[in-house]
Amino acid sequence: MDLTNLCAEIRNYFETEKRFGTFTISGGSISPSNFLQSGQYYRIVGSVFNDGVHRHPAHDLTDETFDGAVWAMAVPPAVIELLHKIDDFEKAEANSPTAYTSESFGGYSYTKATDENGLPAGWRSVFKNELNRWRKL
Image (cartoon, rainbow, N blue to C red):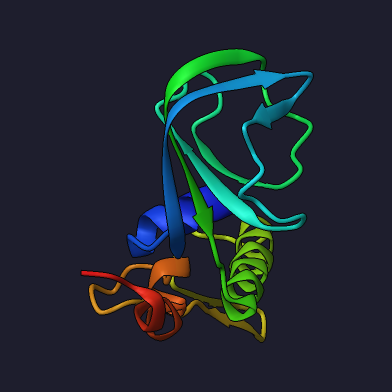
């Protein structure tokens, strides 16, 4: 899970300012960026190679010039913590069986949490209440 996907899921990019125009990415850095603070998250929109959420100063961007937008963001620390919890959950789930919800044999029993449809609980259902706190309709 990354912040781009989490923001898309909750339809909330925590934008504080949107700048529109021509942006140049050279040497992995975006310009102009004088409206971004060090450590601040921002979203690139309209780029061929770099659409998504990044953290300033980013040095891993692909060089290009594009007409689009850069959204300055104010992501609450609680959202970053939630992102880490979801990432930990996904890593744990990758190492657990997902084809069944319950099994037992030889004194061993395993039951997997399920959602309202009886399917194995994914991160969306496990973290639904926390996600809803930040979700925009």
